[in-house]
Amino acid sequence: MIMTNLPLSADLIAEANAREIEALEDDYASLGRKLSRTGIDIDAIKRRVAGFSVAVPSWGAGRGGTRFAKFPIAGEPTNIHEKLEDCAVINQLSRVTPRVSPHFPWDKVSDYAGLREAAAALGLGFDAVNSNTFQDQPGQAHSYNTGSLSSTVKATRQQAIEHNIECIEIGQKLGSKDLTVWVGDGTNFPGQQDFARSLDRYLEAAAQVYAALPNDWRMLLEHKMFEPAFYSTVISDWGSSILAAQELGPKAKCLVDLGHHAPNVNIEQIVARLHRFGKLGGFHFNDSKYGDDDLDSGSINPHQLFLVFNELVEAELNPRDGFNPSYMIDQSHNVTDPIESMLSSAEAIAACYAKASLVDRAALHAAQESNDTMMAFQALRRAYNVDVGPILAMARYEAGGAIDVLATYRQSQWRPRKAQERKAVGLGAGIV
Ligand code: LRH
Ligand code: MN
Figure 1: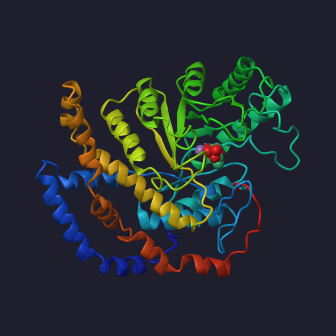
Figure 2 (figure 1 turned 45 degrees about the vertical axis):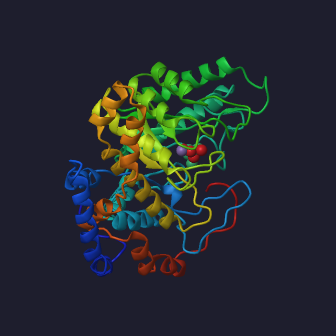
Figure 3 (figure 1 turned 90 degrees about the vertical axis):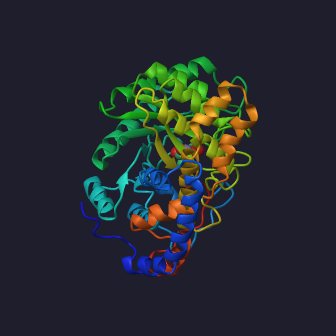
C-alpha cells in the first residue's frame, strides 16, 4: 500500500537535509578512507544498516509513569491512532522503525483491518503482539491477583489462555507473526506458592496458547527477575524461560528484555546461550541502572548494548534453527518527549549494530584461538570506538529520512501542534 498519509512534509525534511548534506558527505568520505585502510568497505556497512530495523512499542509513544506518578506531556497520544501517527513520525525521520508492537487491551479497537490499513498508509506494519494478564480490566470475571497462566484458580488460568488466544486472532488481522507473553505471576512471601506446581500450571496453560498458534507464528516467552512480585517470579530468568520454551515446542522462543536481569548480569552471554540452543526469539531493548527502569537504550550502558549486538552478529554468521530475532524497543518515557527518546534510542541501537558489523571477526577468532587476550579485546574495542554516525545518517538520508533527526523533529513543531489538536491526558500513575 502506498504511504499516503505520512505525518511530516517531505519539504521540511529536504530543507533540513540541504543544510546538513555537505558536511555529511565530507564526514562519510573521510570515514570511508579510514575504514578502507583496514579493508572495510563503508558502503557495505551502510547497506547492512539500511537493512536493519527495530520495532517501537505503541505504549512508548505516550508518557510512561512509575508507581508514584505519571506526568503527561501536552500533545501526547490518547489512542492507538494517535500513537501510530507519532510512531510514523519516528520512522519518517529515522527510517529504521517501520513496525509497531501493540499491546492488548491497551490498543483495542473494533476494526483491526482498518487499523492495519491506517498503519500501512503511515508506512507502518505490526510486529509482535503483547498480551496483558498483569492488570484486571473493568468487568473482568476473574482477577489476576492470584496470577494468570500459573494461577491456582482454574477459571483464572482459562481466562488468561483465552485472552492470549484472542491476541493471536487480533495479531493475524494486523499481519503479526509473534505473540509476546510476559506474565508477572509470582509471590511476595516464602511459602506463598510451590515453585514446581506454579511452573507446571504455567506450562499446562501456556501449552493451550501454544496449540492455538498458526503454523508460521512464534510464542516469545519474556522472563523477568522481579516486579510486580518481589520474592519469586514464575518465569524469572533465562533458565526458566528456555526450559519452558523447550517443553512447549519449536514455535516457542525466548525474548530478552535487557532490563529484566539483576544489575551486572552478563546479558550478552545469555544471548549466546539462547542462540546456541535455537531459542533466541527476540529483544526488548532499553537500559537500566538498578531495576526494570525502562530507560532509553544505550543511555546508561552503551557498551553492553554493543556486546549484545556483537553476539547477534556472531549468531547471524552461525545461524541455528532459523536465526530471526524480533528487535523491539520497550521503554517508559517519564521525563522526555517520547518521540525524541525513541529517535535517540533507535539511533543508539542501529549504531551498536553498525559497530558490531565493523568487528574484524577473523582477527577476533584468531586471537581467541591463540589466547591473545589483549588482541581479542582490541578487535572489539577498535570497532566500538568508531563513530558510525555518518554511516547511519547517510543510510537514513538515502532512504528519505532526516540527517539530523532531533533537530528536524523540533523544526517540525509536531508536539506543539499536537498539543493544540489532542485532548489532554489525565494525571495518573503506572505505565499506561
Ligand atoms: C514487563 C514488560 C513487558 C510489557 C510491559 C509493558 O516489565 O517489559 O514486556 O508487557 O513491560
Ligand atoms: Mn518488556
